[in-house]
Amino acid sequence: MFPLPPEDRTLSPYTGWTRAHWEAVADGLLAAVEPYRSADGAVINLPGRESWSRCDGLEGYARAFLLAAFRVAGGGPEELLAPYARGLESGPGVWQPIEDRTQPMVEAASIALSLWLTRERLWDRLAPATRERVAAYLAEALRHEPVDNNWWLFPAMVGGFLSAAGLHAEEADAAVARGLARIEPWYAGDGWYADGDNRSFDHYNGWAMHLYPALLAHLSGQGSPGPRLRRFLESYALTFDQDGGMLYQGRSLTYRFASATSLFAGALLGSTPLSPGQTRRVASGVLRRFLDAGALSAEGLLTLGWHGPHEPSLQSYSGSASPYWASKAFLGLLLPAGHPVWTAPEEPGPTGLAALPGPGLVVQNTGEVARLFNHGSQHHPGDPLYDRYAYSTRTAPTTRVPDNHFGLVRPDGTVTERGTITPRGAGSAGDLAWAASAGDGVESLSVIRGAVEVRVHRVAPGSPVRQTGWALVASAGPAAGPGARVLDGDGLVSELVAMRGYSRAYVADDPEGSAFGAPARVPVLEGVAEDGWAVGAAVLGDGSTGVPSAAVTADVITLTWPDGTRHAFPVREPGGDTA
Image (cartoon, rainbow, N blue to C red):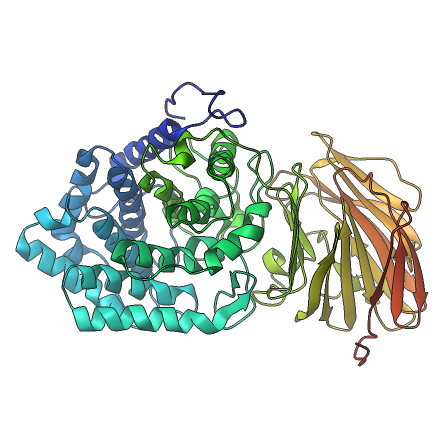
């Protein structure tokens, strides 16, 4: 990795990192891509796999340009813009055209945002003919159809810049209004948007759905993000653990520390529940965690993967320049050096529990690990990045032996998928939270207290069932009474304890492992749900809360915890009408 300043454990007692570290990382990333720039400056062709869009050179230019723009707009040296200014001369004649639902529309938004951020230092100094050609290229984003999800915000971002520059103003303003109006029905509540006309709740909330409206408001000086960004950060900030771990859930995870973008956006717009010291502590923790864990190649390039190269973390649209979406995290440099986010001492990140009825999620942070319990997010049925019952910052989905899954066992030994997820609600009471949903032939309830999650499922009586727990890169631990236990090299415990409807507990090996390494080991419970109830407790971390006892009466399950606390929950029969 490139040289970094000395740690400052007085100002930053948790990460040691300051604004100077962010500047040094930005400079190092920018320098590392320069050997791959074309002679005319308009494309950056990084080594590695080609994406389905086949415009990876444009993607490399646009995403690195955004990093340079944040750096310069935040007080960095203007000469960082020189190669990007040179690329603008020939770019409109070299870049792939913007057409309906094509990748150049995405990259046009980054170029437009970069030009807006550095307008006085770059755009206003370009020759009039160059400005005209670039504006004409970008304006095509206003005239073509985006993918019906967060992509509506890309023409909006282009429109915001062109309107500010006094170019194509009528079309530009219409694109802004159209984009903001299109995402409005996707707001589910609790600060969370679905990424399209579906129930896909993921990191696109932070690095797209909230980010672009926030930047439009900030750069145009018109309007404000309202209370939604603050509301979002109340739960989203809980998805980062004390070691800088980011939640492994949803698509485009190779964007890595782009997950910190909305934390800085909240500080920039004064719409955050976090203190300045918390904001920097969480954001710096994420950036440092990925760099320490091997996200960079020997040449200083961001790799395609998670901690290091990892093919299962990618999608068909992932190409060699895709990871540079992480440039968005450097939005924090727009906060001046004297801003409290950079000058206040680091504070511990937030911990706690949040039930989110809108998206159908529960988020919990114990410090050691952050977990998301999923009873409402789905991209398309069968996608392991969305279909699991739970995700965390210390684990990732396994595929050979699916983790955190419940299903009916078929005669051939295979297990049914979760199917289409129908949310049944979410809520909290004191130190406990719950969420419920229906799948194919299953009604499910998660009850979370401390490190213990009670997983309740109702199926047709007499159904063979299988439940899996958290997958760890570890050696199998000893059987723990009625359950199965795994311990990883850092002392993290994954345990699955049978409570009702299970008769066998064991640990299964998944040789392909997860994004955290291979092989992985997964606790498993199996049995026959004679009365239609299958109940188990999944533990990740310190299980000192203890596993409760369970009693069933008609359509209600009552949990009694070791400290005497008791909670009752209705769970309907599959296909039934019980409330």
